[in-house]
Image 1 (tube, rainbow, N blue to C red):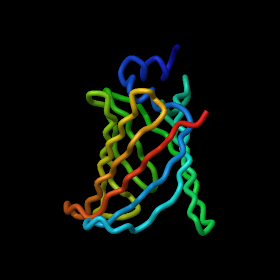
Image 2 (tube, rainbow, N blue to C red):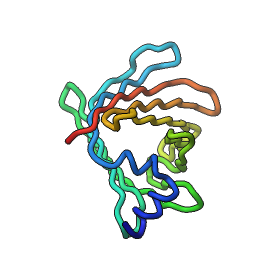
Image 3 (cartoon, one colour):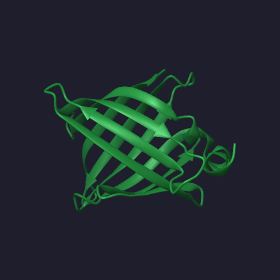
Image 4 (cartoon, one colour):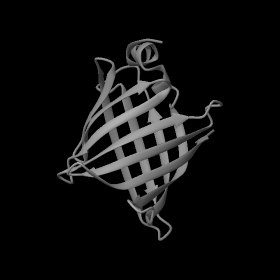
Length: 151
């Protein structure tokens, strides 16, 4: 192992464990727990050896009514964290006690930000993601995502 992968293995080994393809369901809820939206997600996490990004994520979002969205973005590693800067969001991620934690500001929605916690199961075959959404510092929404690793 060399380059970005070696650096990630040494400094963010829990993040590296998320490499691969995942399938799951996003459930967005308001602050009272009412379902606002639900859709499938196909996510691919990759850690290239070289290039501009130490981490690249690909997301396909699929709704029951046939709507689809595709997003792809890369993260830069420095000082023990991954940093993202896209047209939709900017922020950083780190790991602590086996958890992946993200703090992201929405560039496409001023005043909005979210924190995300991701925990992979002990067998590495499933993971849970929880987002806490804030608008002007006040919590207003949650996103829950349960995913299974694809072969």
